[in-house]
Length: 183
Image (cartoon, rainbow, N blue to C red; front, side, top):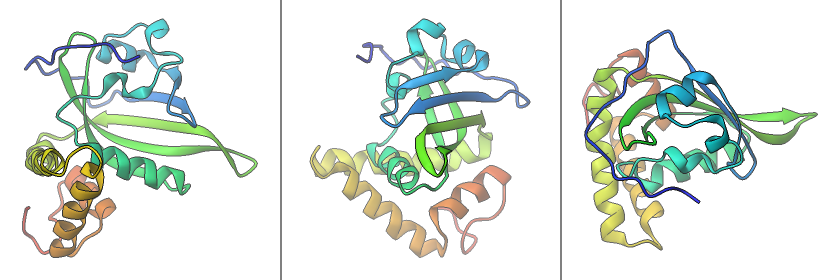
């Protein structure tokens, strides 16, 4: 069960040369967490192993973002994206995540997640997008939240002439997006 934690407005940083790594089973339960993950999230290994990865989910993250992640990895594809996580103390940290299926003889066993510090410019660009997705989710209600926010995101990316993957990779690498406009 996810602990009840009150978010703070304190940002946690980690070094650009550090990588947060975790593995989960097919249901999203953590089976491995590296020391960087434990230090940054402020959870001990015993607090992480066997629990849902959403233990670090920050309430500022739209549900649609995670639906997109799960839809992508369950198709056997890798996913890239920006995620705001929450520590055991309620502090937050931004990551650029790459989640990849862990395959054995072609069958998925679980998922690998490798996260790097998200660039400040990318965070500035993604925050208003996530805020709009959250607004749409609240308006749509729990049953239709994910679909509504993902539909908006899809229309926005279509208007920019880009895909989700290209959009987030462009943000991460500091390249211009789509038609040169920012959402």
